[in-house]
Image 1: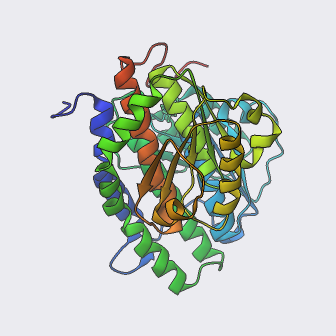
Image 2: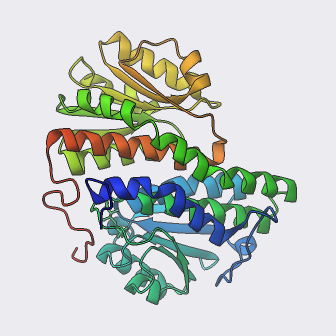
Length: 364
Ligand code: F6R
């Protein structure tokens, strides 16, 4: 039932404050200010590496997870697209563990990668939304996302719930590995607890985002740029836009701009820049200057500080609330999803059932 929404995708975007809250509460004790103990088949303190593997949007949540595990827990992460992981014969350390991320829990390549790790005899965890799935069953521990059924083919709420689990796990790992003090843990847990409220605020930017989408629907090519955890989000934005609006889009690390994609920049290819004000914001501003100097049109997704400090003229600036760094990937996922959604609506595509795509990819 879509309720009073036009599409399941719209409904699922709007469910995010609630399902993020449920998912976080499963892993974090907000009142106590701590991450909950998990019954894991490995000890984070003893791991030398963590392998993460998944497909599509789930892969991109894993990529953001890598930034968190490495930064917060000093745990090196090898992240792969499952269809590459299963064939590339990477050496698997006996002191490692593997995490698989999947909404459906049935994705063929992700399952094959899990079985590859099973053969290598390392402990396996699965972040899944469908708890009765094959990937859940075959893993040593299931780490559920509590997103509820996701009907729209384009993944939205499952993605932000995967991020919620990964952030919580990274905190757990940091506590176990001694890189997160009790004070820092309390601070991070408090910051994460604020994610649902901020997500709700971002949903109220729908009018403005719809207006931007109306413009975007006129273009054939779109480039998304971001640094750090906004780089996977840039790729997620491009993936979402191409799969439901059929507009060609690419997501790049902003620092890669001058290593190739800058050749494409002209007034016919808008550039969506995902850049909250952070320690590398200035670097992204210089990328925007490079785009502007070539007649490129910029749509900037940032916060108040970013909007005031960016001296570059934009086609539109979407200003989000100032949010703590740990929750920025969760909060910035929303405008990215909304932009793709409204653009597809303007294009008149079948938003919930885009052509050629299936909700669960059980064939290779
Ligand atoms: C994108 C999308 C796909 C899935 C991918 C993995 O919106 O939905 O890229 O993320 O097919 O699916 P799961 O998570 O079911 O393994």
